[in-house]
Image (cartoon, rainbow, N blue to C red; front, side):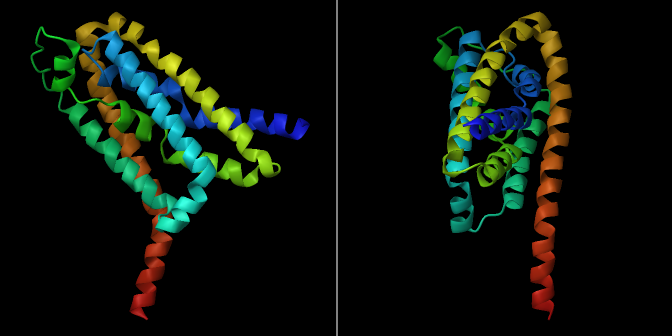
Length: 219
């Protein structure tokens, strides 16, 4: 029992650090500039539900899924980096927001893409690093029931993430339109750097395999 309690604390700290919802808050504020608080709350909830669900699936079945599909973690990192880079490029354009109609919130939603799933849930919250972390924790845990502390840590992390993202609206109101415009450009640059790092890490993991295949064909 003591071993599972200790491992639960290790799992919670590791998953919370790698998900890092605190660093996602300013990105969330920048990407949802102009949205209503209700829309931001809804996107935050969906993002946390999807992110938690994704990590739980990979924690329980990740090794089997990757082996069955023949997908490496390096390839997953490259794919996540590409998704993040596309979002960063949109933010760096700094184009004026399209004119908002005075109709219902559904009309407003039709004028702006929903970022709840991509890139908020994936790869910002449940990115390649998070997937790798939960898979490693599952492989090194104590005993058959290792999934319990890992899944519990994932759920607690995303409950905390949801409340942090809900509070992002306070920051949004404090910044105002001008502050959000500046923040959007800065965060776009940071997102681009993170995306490139994801792809570099992924390519670094794939490079030995690429060289191995190249040498095999060369021989």
